[in-house]
Image 1 (cartoon, rainbow, N blue to C red):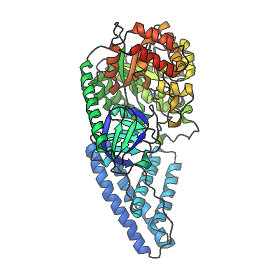
Image 2: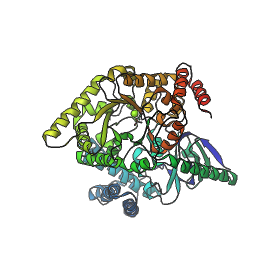
Image 3: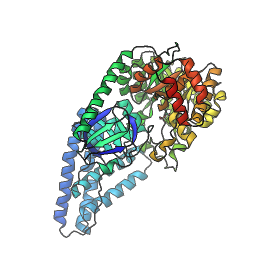
Image 4: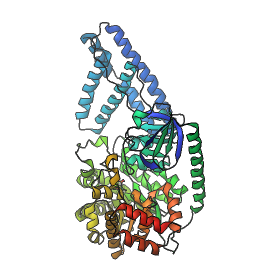
Length: 572
Ligand code: PEP
Ligand code: MG
């Protein structure tokens, strides 16, 4: 019997493949006294050996499939497996205290983890993480339980997980991972955003997928409607195979628009840009005919490493993006860490409300030693293309002034040291906080541009956590309250001769696009995979009609009324 589960549609398309459960297994055990210490030590060494064989395989595979960088972490794990300082005290505990291998391993590794974690040193903190990972692997072998190894996936699979971190998602090999389904998350959680840049179908926020699916079950993902079918019948399989073919055909037809301008039917030109997380996303950007980069989320540079990326490493990444975009605008957002994007090696204090806490520009202004290398790398890269810089999560005019002052001071310093820096870098802010939208007319006098971050602006305006599927009904981009805030921002920028873009997911939403065109948005930045559909839609709309649509939409009561207005204005 097949079973259908619904969640939040995160990335469109149909995927059909076998399930791969990426779930931490239960590694609990009962402590027991051992009578035969020698055979328990042997049992422990067997587990070490099995772990070594397994890790070597994973390391070799990662090196071929994901590159040397990603493989290095497994080298560090292999070293832990051979470390006498860890192994000898475990053997001693088994021999002298009659502890079983599981308890001995647990006690000794916990001691090391606590010591390393308490050190104020990123290198030692990483060692703590290595020991934690390796101990888990050894414990799995002691208990006869195998751990999931996503980097080893080598057949067509659909990943089933509670959640995927951005770095989990970044490590997925698209040749084999056809899609994913998670228990938690919403349309704007980062796993969802990554699925769109990878252009693989995904459904998030199903609440229960992990407990409904077994490894190897056949799965269908309908990423447009947010449905997941577990062990489909032959008829269901046929139905979705034909939907899949139709979807691929539609995508192929849209390719014709790749090199066309984005102009409304009545000739109003807007810019369609792409959101990227790493230079690797550039392929999709070009393939889908983006006119620029509207949001380069630089935090992935920081998340993919175990330490802060140096000024030079960052410079190379920014230079590459600017050069590859060949003079087209590239808006780089400075580090936006916090919320659902954490940096384990920074060892930040846990907060009750991380989305409202010490993050993004707040952290960068407070820790110039983190911020300055990024600013310098950007300034140095500026001569290689058309760079614009924006600051995330700006809440006050003073924050913008402070960030700008820091940038100008670094610019001066670089010029003094003989570097070339472009004189033509636009400086903007993301509008993600209602306070900033309310004061847009004042900000507009000081910034060169706005980019509206609706993922956060909607969560803060509605007071609804973007990660929570239980309140995901409050993610209401078409609510008149949100439209009014957007109008205020766009009008304020135009009043000062500045421009406004949008880089939240709303910019690529087919119901929102007619409204945004009517509101006069200048730049729409979205997942590259949405660009051609957006261009197709805009080419069929008259901006003048959309202006009258928006006038009505701003004055109704509910999101549903706005949706029906849009439908009545856009139906052929
Ligand atoms: C946003 O908040 O809309 C945005 C684009 O930033 P992020 O999704 O990275 O928070
Ligand atoms: Mg944001």
